[in-house]
Length: 211
Image 1 (cartoon, rainbow, N blue to C red):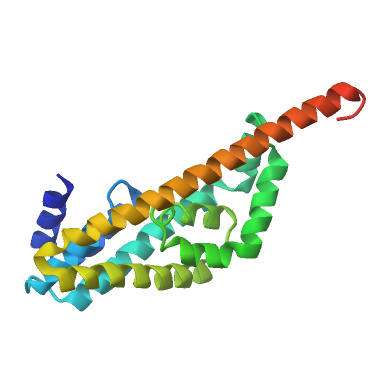
Image 2: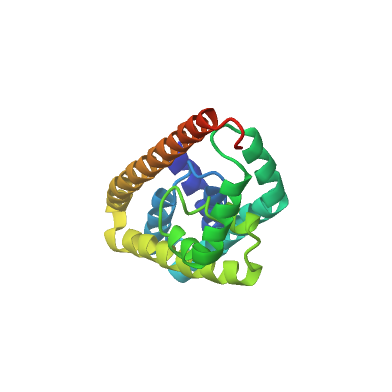
């Protein structure tokens, strides 16, 4: 069980265990920070380790995990993504360029606010890497967003004590709303791409000499 595993890490490593758990949460999103951090706050309140040390370790874990995914995106690269887009149905290389142009314009705020959105917190690092956002800027934004998110959850765990799971349940509801919105966005984009594809086919059929 995830809770038992997290508790064991914290018992063995103390505050660094919080950082390790959060690092793994960034790499493997199914491990929820909404569970790890309130539990860390409660454990710290019992005197197992210092709450400020737990917060610092958690931010270090968040930023380290984010940089790993950033480097994955950077290694993957835009050119490879364009080739994949050309091969795929419904999308093409221009869609990749449009997405990167959007990220150039709004990427700064996307990285910061993305750290506050479940399901997006980790994944936002990958397009930042693909777009080759300035690594220092990326690190500062990730640190700021992670500090806010981690502070709220750890503080809630400290305040609620043995009722720390209340935080997890509350954030599960928040996460569910976010996932529904993301699903609606994905469906909307898919419908747009299908409609565009059909329009292009109809145009090509009407004018065979036009690409």
